[in-house]
Amino acid sequence: MSTTPVRETVIESLDHDGRGVAHVDGKTIFIEGALPGERVEFVAYKIKPRFEVADVVRIIEPSAQRVSPPCPHFGVCGGCSMQHLEATAQVAAKQRVLENALWHLGRVRADVLYPPIVGPAWGYRYRARLTVRHVPSKGGVLIGFHERRSSYVAPMDECAILPPHVSAMVPRLRSLVAHLSAPDRLPQIEIAVGEGLTALVFRHLQPFTAADETLLAAFARDEGVQVWGQLSGPDSARRLFPAEAPGLAYTLPEFGVSMAFRPTDFTQVNMGINRLLMRRAMQLLDPRPGERIADLFCGLGNFSLPIAKAGARVVGVEGSDALVRRAGENACANGLEARSEFYAANLFEATEDSVAALGHLDKMLIDPPREGAIAVVKALGASAPPRIVYVSCNPATLARDTAVLVHEKGYRLKGAGIANMFPQTSHVESIALFERD
Image (cartoon, rainbow, N blue to C red; front, side, top):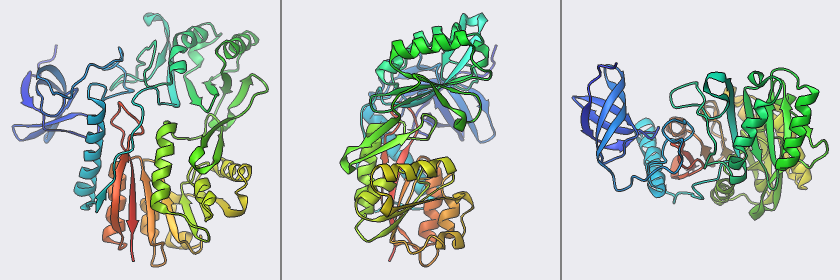
C-alpha cells in the first residue's frame, strides 16, 4: 500500500501533456486529470528533487470547463488525455502551449496570433495503429490503444475518435483475430481510411493459413473493407482481399488535386483539418507562377501539389525513397509533373552546401516530424528564401528552430497559430510564418 500522502492544491495551468500544473512547497507538481482553477486532492507517483508527477484523487472545486468524458475507456486508455475538458477550452489551452513554448524556449513572440484551425471533435481519426494482444487471463484477444503509462492494452469495444464505421467494427475485429490460427502472432492492426475506402493492415509474424485467409476474405466482404497483410517492414504490406480493388486516396478539393497513398504511408490523421491547414499554408506561402519553392519533408506531396497547382515550380525533398516515388506519381496523376521535381535526401543531415544545391528558391515550406528541422534552419545561408512557412507537430522543436531563425538568421516571426489536428489529446499542431528582408 502506498505511503505517499494525499495533499491539496489549486491548479494554475495546463502543461504540454494536458496535465494540471501547481506549485507546492517550492516544487512544481504535474497532476494528471486536473484542470486550471480546480482545487484538488492528489497523490504523487513520481517524486524528483524539483518536481513531482501525480494523479488526482478528488476534485474539491471543479472547473466550469470540466465535462463528463463520453468514452467509457477514458482514464484507462492512453489514446486521449483531454476528454474531461470542454472542446473550445482544449483549443485555447493548446494555443497557450504554443505561445509559452515560443517564449520560454525560443524567447520569441509572434507579431500576430492566427485564429485556431478547428473541426469536428469526434470521429476524426482516419489513421490509427491498434495494438493486439492475446491474453487468456483477460478473456482472450484484446484490441485497443495502450493504457496510460503502460505497455498493456486498454481493451475497447468502441472508440469515439475513430470514424463511426471503424469504431463499430472493433468487436467483430476482435472476434476475427480470436479465430485466426495464431492470434498471439499478430501484434498490430493499422487502420487507414481514404475517401470511400477503408484498409486494415494486419501485421502478422507468421504467414496466414488457408483457413485464416478464408476468414479474412469473409471479413473484408462483410465489412466492405480492404484487408492487407504485412509480414515485415511497411514496404512488405500487400493487399490480400479483395484481390482487385481501387487504391486509397484523399482529395484537396480547394486545390483540385487527389493524393493516392498506401495504407502504410504517412498521411495526416485528420483529413478535415488537413484541408483547412492547407488553405492557411497556401495563404501564408502565396505561391505564384514563375516562383521556385522548396517543400522540405514533402512526404507524398501533400503541400507540393497545391504549390504546383498555383503555377509555381516546387522542389520536394523527403528522406523516404518510397514517398519520393509516390510524390512523383501523384504529380503525374494530377498533370503537375512539369512543375514538380522530387529528391530523396536526409534532411536531418542538411548542410549549407546541400541546401544551396537545391538552387534559387523564392520561398520555402518546412513540415518536419516531431524532431523538427534544426539542421535545415542552421544550414540557411545569405541566399535563403525571404519567406518560410513552417508546419510543426511539436511546439518544443518549433520553438528551438524559431530561436535559430530569428536570433541567428535574421528572420522575423510574423505569425503563428495552432491547428487542432488531434482533438481530445494534448497533441499540438501549429503553423508559423517567417520573413526577412
